[in-house]
Image 1: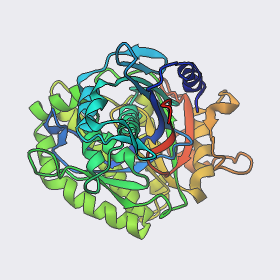
Image 2: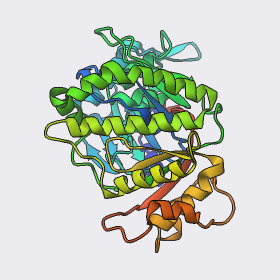
Image 3: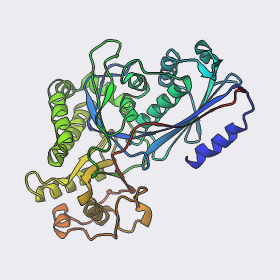
Image 4: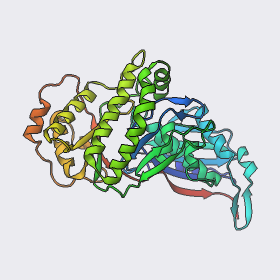
Length: 413
């Protein structure tokens, strides 16, 4: 548990009310390999196209949430990374949806809280991310998935059909529905007006492709200038390519991606991932006024990996770049190529950086540092690169979904 959340938990332990319930939860980031961009319903957050993502192992990137519910609290509140934030419409939509599904809290045959009494219980919500927020690293997906899972556990919500909770998490942040599950996850576009068929489901679990690795190159820790919500609205209103992509490109690509994943075909997976990232950012540029999420570092990473992959010949791709709505590069690769890719990135971007520049909390990269391959460096055109900066590289792999980590109450039984 992060120190900030741990200190908050200690403070809440001193809360003297005899009617409180507390739940804690973690949820991972997910990085799409087929992107979601654009909504057909803003309130329910229904997408204009399906999408598919990989779940990043929570040991390297995750949201942590603690929720305390009590009648004795003066009002509901939200604290995000130590800062008090308002409970916005989307958070309230998730609360309302879960309260409608709430079950009574019972123990030893005694009802402690009736189902219709939960609305009288105010919420103290504390959430902490161990990675930059609103910087294009899917922080809202992890946060809303964590909140949904945590509050559903507190209210005793039971799914009536597989994926029901994903329809709730989606109302907070669309991509949050994918962070409830591990492995690679499909978010189905759906067609129902009420969104009941716009759900997430697991394509393969986190054990299916054990040597898949993920390198996150943090090119910017700052909050992005154009939020995903604003960017999507602008694209839907002005980009002809957005409609073409949704109607003609995404579904064939989804089928090909699922086939590549099931077959563990990295070459096909890599090509599809990079093509879809390019397609998404082309949509952003086709938007008017254009949206530019990539920076000079992003462009350099694209050029470098394109050059390295070209050296391997047809079907020999060693790395797949993808960029969400931000400049940070996410690179999918296989375990056998991870050390060489890190050596390349260190040679290109890491000169003079501190030892912790490569953050590998799971110790996935064993052994000493390697020298970058000379032919790779030559292909990348190593030299002075004005404006190119990688602040940190996070090493991870595909992991599991949201998990409950604790539950308690102060009722006397």
